[in-house]
Amino acid sequence: MAVYAIGDVQGCYLSLRALLRRIGYDPEADQLWFVGDLVNRGPDSLRVLRFVKALGDRAKVVLGNHDLNLLAVAAGARPPARRDTLGPVLEADDRDELLAWLRACPLFVTDPILNVSMVHAGLLPQWSFQQAVGFANEVEDALGSIDSVSFMHHMYGDKPRRWRDSLSGWERLRFITNVFTRMRYCDREGRIDLAHTGPPGTQAPCLAPWYAGRGDGSDLLIFGHWSALGAAQIGDVICLDSGCVWGNSLTAARLDTRPVELTSIPSQEA
Image (tube, rainbow, N blue to C red):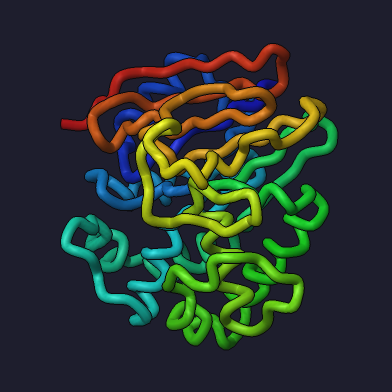
């Protein structure tokens, strides 16, 4: 059995299928991990959702910011953005089934056998993997609760910027969500910056990529979200967002072998 992690698909169904052919994906034996942002901006979010959902236990998915956006728009907690391409999902006959499946996806997964963990955007440098599991569970519980619409109404915003163990309520859940699904840079004190999206080296001197100096090389951490960074391995972290939806490429990483092998194919979408 092979295990492949795949970067931000964002509705690029043709590219996803082309990448699976390139890596020789065996649907009867192999497992696929998706780093989030299955939907939006690309042309076929509905087919992507249906395909990944149908994989069942053969897929692991973490939620990205665009996936949360779909849930919030569907719940009436957020208006659609001008560039959203979510209409076919929201109008589909199986809309409710797809949204319920997506809402049940985690924000962070870890596999102690493979020594690999996965998140959409990143982890705060002060957080251990064990803490990250607990914090992710807090947001997952909010998404799965009967009060999930209230959470989605309070989910958006750039504050608070700094983690404190004493954070509570919507502020605590918002900060955790921002770290897992939106963060790229932070400072030495753990204050996150959600405004700057450029590649490393273009940020303010007080900021560093969230992964700088993280880890001891014993566990890999897979993430997406950062198309300006592109597909790259930096120490024990691997970014898989190679900007497929922007006409660049879609990337997979084989996780059950070392060293990890990256495979990219050009975007197949017009």
